[in-house]
Image (tube, rainbow, N blue to C red; front, side, top):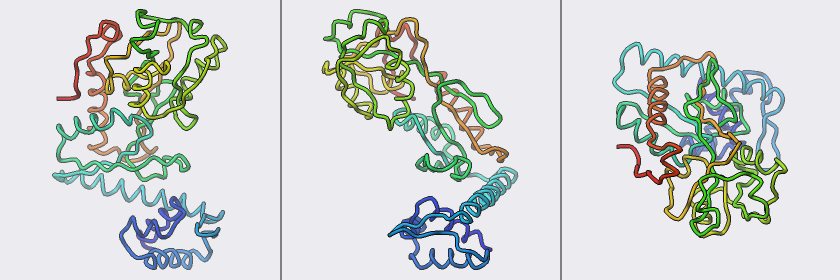
Length: 308
């Protein structure tokens, strides 16, 4: 059995496509198909079932997928530990990101400035697959509560505010209660957004009833809709910091300490490389030094344009 067999098998299982896997590895489709057939012959059983143009794992294939992920993960750990032990001049770090679409470029830029020897690879987070099987070193994700576990740590608590236009009657306020939001037009995230899970705590409280909704998941456009007084919106701190608009006023939400938390996690029992440790330390420092406090928001003292 070759590692290449397992690599092709794993990606076909994740993409449900031989052709897409071939494109990713920059090989012809027959090369991928032959590797899959070779693995199935060695294991003595088919691993996929076919439906139209897609292929899916059968029950035996699902078991083989779990073992493949573990074997490939161990091989990656071996390479990383050997690289650390031999003090190689360069290193690789693979990140998967579920949250932080706005702040991520600044975070990576800040890290690369300090650690130019580390090559960063970004892969799309796939919610249909268990993180342990994704083959990445670190996952950045959000939660409703802080984490401090064997393989996960919270790196930032992000507060949530109410954003209104300067033309809105609430604009002269510094804070607002949920009961005052009755019959207001809201800019709301769609159900595909992880942030929606947080704001639903407000909307499901029964304290207020919006008059209408505009649904949008793109933070800059949400800010523009709020600035043009098309509605009000609950927005997280980082959305304001990186896309602040002079025509928007942020209000504290009275008697509601609702936040969400930005976390880093890695595979259980995996080797934690020097690059992973450096990224974690840098991320914690990056968020700790964001020049924005609650008082700054209220007084308009926000002049930061990103990391130096």
